[in-house]
Image (cartoon, rainbow, N blue to C red):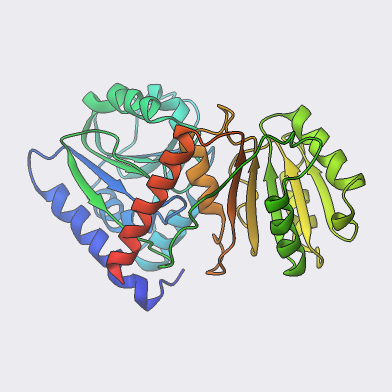
Length: 338
């Protein structure tokens, strides 16, 4: 993995700040704030250095696998390491090994660790700020140092580091709002219809999120069979039960405009280029501010082609406003580096 010249400065800045923080006594916690899906390679030097000193390092992730981006980068640029993904800890944490643990499984940690990194950035997060706080508090006494990697400040009165993009330097897409009283399972507001025309003319891939399976089924039926503008658009119903890899392969091979309708909110569907995201019934409680921010992070994830992130709702909620505020603040970190 090669970092573009424009972003190498930000990567080196991050590494130096992390090393400086670690070297100082008394600063146990560091909160690194950045955009969703930013890179994890900023931790490569501190992890490699501690493993070579035979220290214990634990990397907490939202997924259920190793962080392959980080492992590959360390091996290619620094040297070989030992690593393991832990589901259940039957023995003790071995010195000189990097352990990956799911954020839902932090209670397996019951021994002294030199460094814990809590990564709430590089994969989709379903954890609230309160949940992260509680999990950090449960492992706090077992570690010498903790780094929290998140889209917002988790604890007050601890050292904070704000970063722009590591692998790209373009801003996130900020959400647009459409308010309507139209039943979105039976009709389409005029403004949204105009967006759909633009998506179609430009051959875009549009992911439409709904708050429930029942709602997704009704929207699919409406768009597939009753709206003439979609007659030459591939409209696909994707459910949480679908096999994700086969689905992604199918979409990648599509040449014409694609519309994906789903109740699924998660890690997948972020890997396509030319993607736009629409959230229907965005006023529903399922779409909290953090989910919205991570959905914004999917738009333009693969490249710098700007898409759209549209929230369609009966009214503008506090979660919608907070998501817009957070994306604006994260973009300021990018603009200030340019």
